[in-house]
Length: 511
Image 1: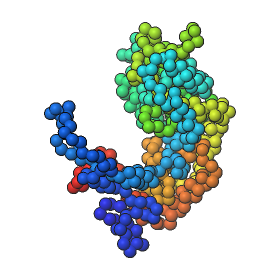
Image 2 (image 1 turned 45 degrees about the vertical axis):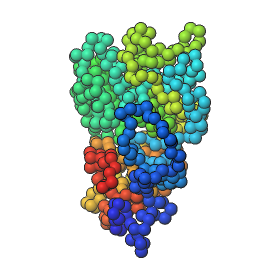
Image 3 (image 1 turned 135 degrees about the vertical axis):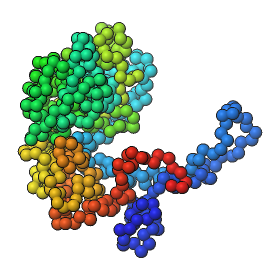
Image 4 (image 1 turned 135 degrees about the horizontal axis):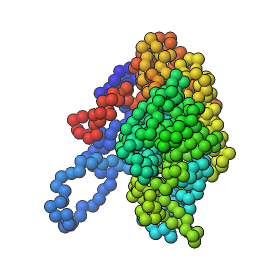
């Protein structure tokens, strides 16, 4: 396969492969500046006569440089770009540790209801009692699911929720006058990368705990690191190896014995929701990714939502604002320090993202308690099904069953000349977004696969068949299929490191 001047692949079977750069019904599409023209516009306007500007010396003296397109050109541009996106609505999205599940359209319909879709944070509280009631009900569901004592809805994402939990822990330590002596946060190697970053941002020192041969916290090392200077442990459960931490209750009890707090990363709640309450595991704080567990879109066209649940030990330090019911039965927003003197303050100007709240509550209510439990059961079942189908041809990182995601290392690629990256790029040619690669770092050349509960047996088998066929191809010596991949994508293999470190963000004519 050859390359045209734009870096796009050309078909070796075409006698005139540079004609359109398209591939069957998938049309080629450049940047707006390449498609449109600066000297035309899609709308004809009559010239205005003798108009006076009120801009003074701020009046524009030269063209903006923006291109003009007609309506059909504009529409085609964005439709063609959309065809190049991989999405959960297109196929199985196997990103590990990200829980890319289907977003039910019922949730989307409810989020667009008048009164929710157009609610404004500066409206008088008397006009948004319905929105406050929804937030209160969402809080009740989250507390029932986790067994915790209070919840902060204001965090806008998972990492923001982590920050909320650790700031509450910091405030609790400060209230005891121990902030100068209790500075160490224990972080297992299998934690999400944001965990140590969040702790460091809160002024704590990070002390790493290695994993044992089973991919779980090394308890001998953990016990050796305990002391009266430990502020907290930040642990993900199930961890990023897709494994449940069997010693989690002992970990919590020992940290508490030394006066510390237990922060649990809730990114993987989808695996245990309805099966156990995190309160019973000894958790003091945990953020909940509504997009991972409760099917709100990743981002959703604005800020997401990462509510943080807190134990009784931390509830008084929860951030402002929060909803509370008055003696007259009406809901009020607690926004001032004098109303909550021990709160660590605000994390953001307003509360959370109403669209995410509506979607998450709709998901919870449509499933019910038993349905949410089945969500976790099916997520774990699907991951173990893929593990069972692939384990004899790929190389599982650890022995035994997994939780909601299956983790493989790259030993099945040993001495083949094919790397984890090559294998993932070849998966693009087969019509799939690659799984998570090289994470967690505790496993060499990791391939982390999370199918979620919303995949059918048929879609799981199709994905497994593809993975097995690629593994067979590797072992039969078809190296170029992998090192040259992707061959069928709009762009060939890119230098991701260079693109991340030196992105070209401005288009110029000579590029």
